[in-house]
Length: 441
Ligand SMILES: Cc1ncc(COP(=O)(O)O)c(C=O)c1O
Image (cartoon, rainbow, N blue to C red; front, side, top):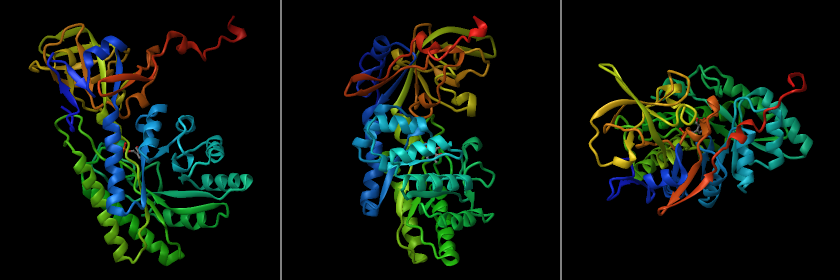
């Protein structure tokens, strides 16, 4: 089952999530349904926060990268766990603020933040903006002047570390839409430019080397590159950065091709980063920077399970068996985007041997609408409840109303009790913003 064994099989042979029977959840709330395990999310927030406290004297901040899963309740949990969040759009920011999240602990990202998003961020009092373009520096400086504030910023840097992960989710190769490259000198030049801005306070730098990364060396290499850059800047510009944000990217278990990383091992990732950071700071005689990390997937990914009801089954003799469910790429587009792999089980027959390799297909009008390809299941029947594991990150947040299907609701489970944190949509929701103009009447 999942890494921290928060999923269990109960006496009825049913899958249990956070103490709740998945078959009962499917009956009570219907399918498709996203189920999130609250304790898992809290535990992961604590692992990172406690490691920064213990190993780095609390001189830093864990940000939950809320693009992984954004709704009011998750910002409440992050606030209660005393961590920060990062947001990448006006919509994520609005949701965080609406949940009462303290604005000073919000970092705002984006390679193309809209003027109205920047203005909104300043109005909300967002703590730090991670700047990714010259034009953004100009605009932010002007907006800050107008509002009579001096806005804290970081610059997004591309350290050129090629993390071992799927090429579509690498973000720090030299060819990337994100960040200023160290290698071609643009990181140095933009720093000099940012330092001239009277209404901006450059605290330091940010990098994010990719996602679903398991190698510690990728992260420690990023630390080395960022420190060498900061050391060179100090010599050239006399500027000493006081904050370093190293992004997220810690991998999670989706299938047995992935490692199962225990909470202790996640702490070890951070310890390796901190130890490298201390040794580089020592080597360059650099004051220890305020350390920020931005895990998203590893906080919510394995906390989530999606429940579906099996519908039609199509067997193409000698070729493949398709098990169709009542969801699809509209609730999980990750197979269509990156051929992402998942583990599926029959939640109502979780104790039965998995003997068949099948592809779980969605109900959208796309041949590529596969939820997971080539998964091992017991022979599935129409009406079975199929659970896809590790769907807490980048599923609900990437969902759409494609084919005018509903984005499924989300329930939060704890100690066997489940509550909606995102309610079901209705047909009326689907047409709420539609308008028939006079010319068509
Ligand atoms: C800037 C930034 N920070 C943090 C994250 C979170 O990464 P992950 O969910 O892999 O931890 C991302 C993900 O794309 C990102 O772009």
